[in-house]
Amino acid sequence: MGRCIASRLLFGIRTTLFLALFAMSMTLILGVILGILAGFFRKAEGVILRGCDVMLSFPSELMILAIVGMLGAGMGNLILANVIAKVAWYTRMIYSFVLVHREQNYIAFAKATGVAPLRILKTHILPSIFDDIVMLATLDAGWVIMSISALSFLGLGVQAPTPEWGMMLSEAKNVMSVYPLQMLPSGVAILVVVLAFNFLGDSIRDARDDRKISIS
Image (cartoon, rainbow, N blue to C red):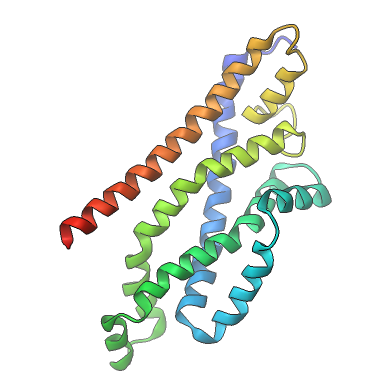
């Protein structure tokens, strides 16, 4: 169509990363709220965890396809589908982080001295699990980018003429027999960004492990 592949590749960075980071932010916010409620307040634990078990019984990719298929293609539905598909997993992981600190002596002392639960969460629980949350988000960011690009490749995500790497791959496959090299720029861009987030998550995890070893 006479489009500049380099320009669309550069502008596609904004679309792909914005959708991935926005979906990750919404998932983290909901996951942190539900995970802390389930981990700190025993009355809410059973209800939230049973709901997570129901959602986790479905494969996340299948759930995303079902939601987008019912609601229709578009960026808003794409973000909503990723949030719904991943929030149960984040809730479970953050719940496990909270359990590590819930029975610690400093939490019991704070409760015994009459400190409000919200203040305990703000001053003790959240700072203690913040590093774990950051590590979790960076390790999973690559999966979100792959999911968004895959849906756009299938025609269920970002729609033309908005530039997006997955959609650029879909457009390139139509001319694969004539000009197969057109698939390389967007494919390599997705590969590099996903690897970068994975390396970042591994680095954060290794840094945390080294700090724990030095402290102990």
